[in-house]
Length: 626
Image (cartoon, rainbow, N blue to C red):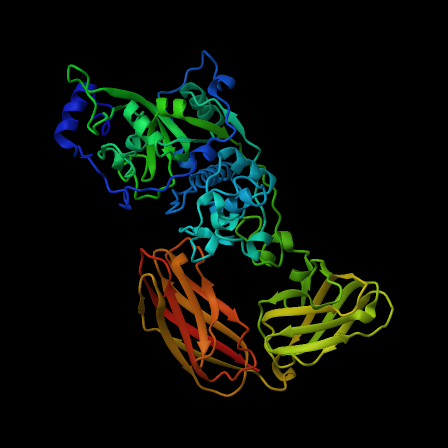
């Protein structure tokens, strides 16, 4: 049936469509209906800098013979949802990037951060800083110059900033500062994360034969962007009657003259990627009054030939498309006349395992010392003894805050001896104070000694941590308290010896507790729920580990914290994107070290976004006392 089962003859399709399909012409559709008001973007940004088709060569040869249908669905990442933000061009570019990395093959299930690209294109590349929109050209070349990060490094925020986030975000769009369009600045972890790039892009001719030739021969998708015609898309923002029967299939027809005129009065743009085509797909056109178009004799007016595209409105749109929910079909004529096309290519990926960062950097399924690539690394030769931070850090001059550098020790065990080694380049050693801290314990290693001598390369034996658990975050602080001289902390290391058997004066005690009573987490309620564990036993906490078991359809909605005896909460998790609906994770917490282990411990879980409910299944505590 044309528009539903496209292989039927046109006349039979029209009869079946009239008898079986709900033909809805909405005279005044509500634009605030969330099902019919998908977000759009700046129409001028989305095609900025694009040449005309007459200025671009065709991708194909004149005698090229292509199949009647073709698609690249098998090499696409999952359909995403831009939710209520007008960042379709960003989503389209990330969809293209993920597709290119799927083709390259090094990274299984690539998932890159739309949030980070929105920031990078406006701040690092300096493009479109006063609008939420952008273009394929800017986005792709931003990824080429600066690179992107994984979704887990900066998860997407589904709602735009408003005046409640920053008063200036209540101004007209063009007057808002860039942070209103980027939802602030990226976290430090995202700025420090590895960057992933794709090749520089190029414009391609958007006529059907040209795009089809590129899809078939390059086997890579095409990003397009252009003017949005509300009635043609069945969008709730249409000011003329619309036809809703194509929504579930994702059919987008060539707009009629009335749709073009009406849409031009409240212009918008949209961007997506083309991933296939069907020459034989026929869909009946839409008339100005929102009904299916017929000619003077009453015969259906058909449009033939459609591109398959991957959209960014989630899987609640085009739910009956046979290629998958969230995919649509758009007419060749719409793409050729009203959009511009841009492409990139597969990246060249070279990765190496980092042997002490708890990540599978080379994506071979083996992490750190379990990876054969780390066989000769010092951290793996003596994994329980020596820990090092080799990242140079400048020491600010005459600054009481100084510089801080950390080492994460994951392995527990009671410390029987500890050595600290530092390598500092400095033109006046007597300016320097060096402190080592972990949890509630801080030890001053060097206090402005050495007068005018250069550099500080020294090893200290430190007793103050003996008897404590080794696991946790160790921080070295270097402060320059004098003027005119500067330096650098080049590296520092810890050598930890742990107690074994009779070598320990006193073995630590491990206190545990759990609460396995499930608690429902209410939707969009910052008050959330609490669950309590009471701990009894002697000793001060030297290491605390909190394990939570949560079920939620969208774990990025959750904020989780723990507190003790009514004190200040310590945040464990905040709106972190997790590619699952179940989270079981152990969080090491240093904030309670040195405090009595006994008391009432409270876990707080809040769902801070609407749409889903979940459950705290259980949680537990493990406290090592010193």
